[in-house]
Image (tube, rainbow, N blue to C red):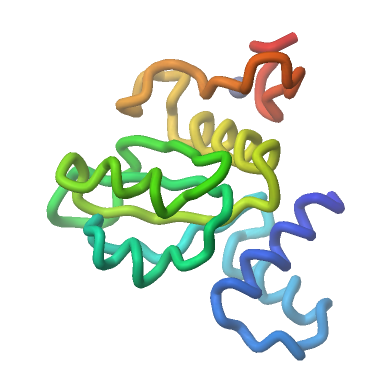
Length: 153
Ligand SMILES: [Zn+2]
């Protein structure tokens, strides 16, 4: 639970909610928004263009993203991914291939890996509903485990 709450705090501070609000109140609000069961929250959707990526992903940090290839209707997750070092740079490799993106920074490469695993499972990767059919990879020798399945055990 501690990791969950930490991430909730992180996502709030990057989404522009006032930092001086009491933490309990912030957590209560976040639980209302998310139903209390999502360990991450992604940004609002944005058009996948170099300009939008530079405008929104301003920090050179690890992170995760979801891509949507449809051009109308609600955001539909078609692909999920991560960068261990530079989310901005990674996202730009997809410009022209997908239409919209959402993202969230991670606190470390391991955090990015775990968040990507969660996204991949939650949006149906294991049922073939994503363009990335393979389970997210972990760096060689890391020993990291998926928080959602035992593929690495
Ligand atoms: Zn897994």
